[in-house]
Length: 200
Image 1: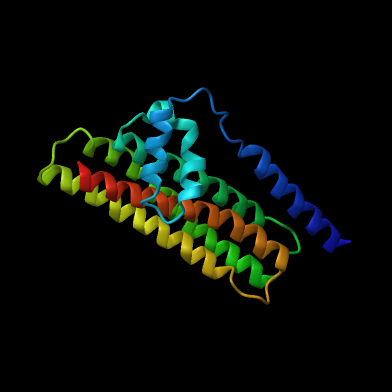
Image 2: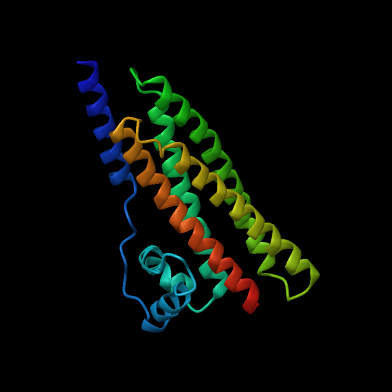
């Protein structure tokens, strides 16, 4: 009975997160803006994810590399928060085995740090975009690159914590799919920030 309740709760959490993570509807977009996103996303490790996640913001981004990086960072923060909220719920499941509970607890700690690093990167990137190339610009954008890299390291660490085949398969899969989704867009955001810095 306890096992049934655990599986039911996991399914509820999974579908709840799907409904919460509703993608913005894409309105009529300027072809030049969408082509800019497609071209820019070639610089990322996950180009299809990059295009899919950023296309809804094409009219806001237009042809601005800073706005592109800014949007990518915002998406990364959103995904990291969703993964963190999901893992937080996992830690509260009754009947969770000690191995899964400890992994979820440790993962939650690293994901909280990921959210923190991404959260402070957004205004820092905004500041760098207001500066011309020079020492101040380099300092601000270097901070952003360092903090996004730290966030990505946190997300990969969380994935490693749930890479043990002896863990509950459903919990492991549900956590990994959400954290990997966050890691993909964080990796893309980092690549786009580097591209913005190179061309500024």
